[in-house]
Image 1 (cartoon, rainbow, N blue to C red):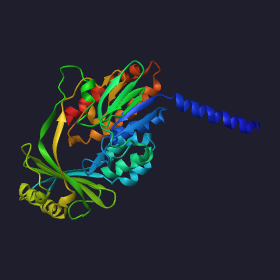
Image 2: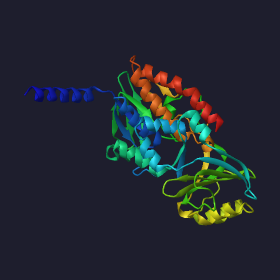
Image 3: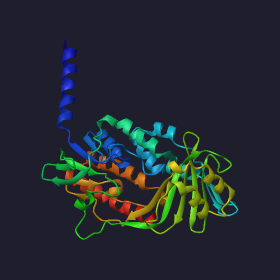
Image 4: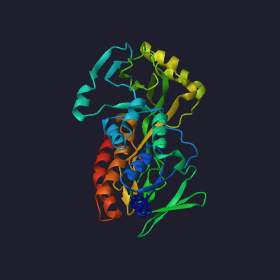
Length: 364
């Protein structure tokens, strides 16, 4: 009898704690939004995630998660799953574009030993599925496109284009590079215009072929201001990408992907020609690469920007997704470890992240 009463009291305490826990509204169900939701729940907050699209289609075929990002996913309890999805990137090499001769080749082991973790290239669809499954895909509100937000002394309300709304104690805007909420956070007079980086990127996944590149290496061919790169991911696949400096706004035609690449990379080494022959044009993405000038304000009251909404960068140093993961963990830990209120904690998040993400954007 006494044991039963104790269990009932404990259950009541747990239920009451959940009911009184502060709630975060997370706008965006991409990598940053899902990491934020997982990190916040790990820190004791309730979350609701709202995603604009009905079905998430990853932008780009894969992502290189560097040790800083891997550590964040380890913190979220996803390290083992991540390693099962990732490729073994033990080496890096750069090759001359014409003859294919090695310009430089080096082991990743000194980096691994220095920072205490390995890089992990992974297919974006696999990463997204892992995050959604951990959070519970059925919990995400899909098809909810935010139109505007309003905040007051006690919380934030998000309004959606279908006329519905959601309210929480604070709001995390992880709504991507085209963020609707960014303008409501930024200081007046600061432009957050996306700017074209000057090149087009084609990317996708292809069956691993060691006559093109070693299975344990990030391989890059460089020359003429262009590059071709391959890295291993799970399932005996390479993630590949081609970068070509081109004017903005050229017509995109999937039927001409192979002929376009053959023209842009005419005279390049045999492995590059083999790769072009192996790709599937219908699953190859073509993206005009943009970034946004670093901006000073990530937080306004009870609203915080996270990921590409707060710092959209080119993929040149592989830190876009990793920076979003860092944002998520730092945000949750800052909220958990400070007790002077939501707005105070979010200002501390701003102080911890602003210089870091500006540095990443400018280096990329």
